[in-house]
Length: 499
Image: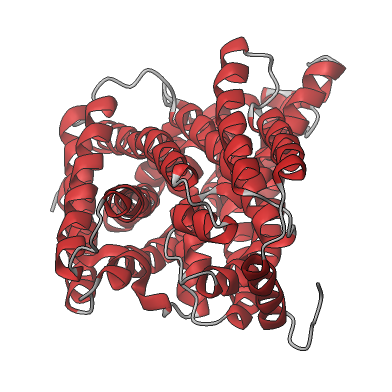
């Protein structure tokens, strides 16, 4: 049998399993809350792996190894920032958001939580946050489709457009019908596939090269800066500081990513966030370590044997094809698709919730029927997918570039508001609205000036300051808000009566 047969067989099995899981989730989804939040019934391990898989996307297996391969270990600061940020997100945000979102009128989306938490009667906060979600997630989803197209170009020598459409179609298949539960359950399988692939590929490559010592020696010979976390003297001090600070700043983005923090809201209880945090942090450490290792090992392998890819972001794809049996290589390729599709499905669900729960529903004077909301939710998934696919037809940026901008947009617009909502009683609707808009605008403006400093950091800081200043001037005592804040604290910290 030909190698291509085994590759297609592995992908066929993967696609079939994803669609089957989507069908199972479809059978268990009957109402709007179930479609959008799985009825707040996710076990810790599902929430942890789902959050990790939906977080990492194609950039984990393509973007990050490609950056390491092209530039060296200095790009690893992104991985450090993400690991620390993810841990703090699970520790600081997860238990409190799970409790608070239910206490505050059973909020099932991030925009509805902001509105209920601040008692915003203008509906502006909910509407603006929904628009921000649609803008940045459409770009984010487009990056996943670009990754899918690149995948098929590199793995099969196929057409970019056909590959992009195929990835989008299968992801739509299980997301459209399975909803949040379908996306979460497929994420578990996809998360496990990703971490196994990122461990197997560099380990096999090291043995093929001649061992760990030989691999390190070649990497150093190719470029002394490759193994230096500070650029090895090849960069000015100012440039190194910008790279390090920008890399670590990626961690701030976690607090504002709707497709990740919505997993916290879906946990069964606030207390289960602790065990979920341990699982999520372990998974993330192994995955990020494997991605960085794959990039470095790729430098040594292709220097020794030749055949380096023209596109650094396809390094893991090429290594798997030249090192592994075609069937195993096919499963690694499926893991790459898993990374892409897990994030794409989560983004489509959040966009759908923004359209239906946070825009359509607030315009209706009478509550629509549950069946109508579920149907509209599916229509929303389809609509956002079509727009994102149109943007992905002619990509003008790298996968990492697309992801970094969308990540910064959410981190700056929502991150400070999420933290203030959970830990500061005096946040007002006008403070939240101001911070959100200032954060999003700062990201666009800072990106346009291209200062070298990741736009997330100034966006986050400026938004935080703006939200606190405006809240100070617009704050008035509200007994309902105070009571909810106290109730949430008592649920997260039993016995607490903090006021």
